[in-house]
Image (cartoon, rainbow, N blue to C red; front, side, top):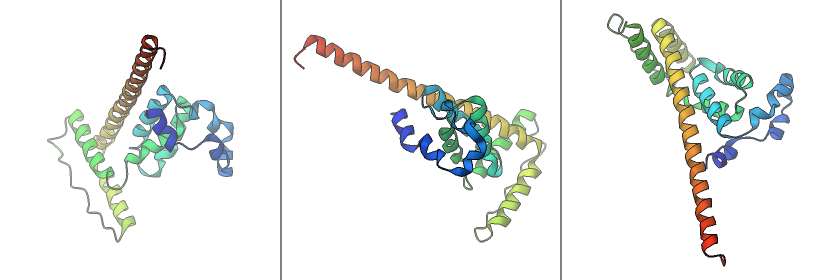
Length: 189
């Protein structure tokens, strides 16, 4: 099931090669390890995507692509995994990161967190600017918390994909063994 799911959502290497813009990267972007789908590459891609998803701004996918090239994990899976952060989820994730960082630093009682600014849908650029200023005002607890939360999410994502992939493989092996035993008992099937 995990392999079939990832194959549905992943583009093929040949289709990606058609984009001339990506020719700037040369053959590094088309290394077989970045496109091969197995338990290690998929779980590594999810971990990279979850880690890089907390990078602020539009640098998430660039960071994920660079990490995939360095670590040789599945690139499309990593890029898709960064989509868990969006304008609706980034503020709660950063609030959680701030609380984690202030708890680790021991400053949770000294500097209570200020409330995030209200989002105005009629002025999205102004809202993004105010949210960015709010995040910068939170300082070191936020920076440490974002890093720790990214590490936690990456580790959990890696372990979850590895365990689900292994569980699915064990089910397939068990089913094959059961079918083989049936054939031995009743060869007419």
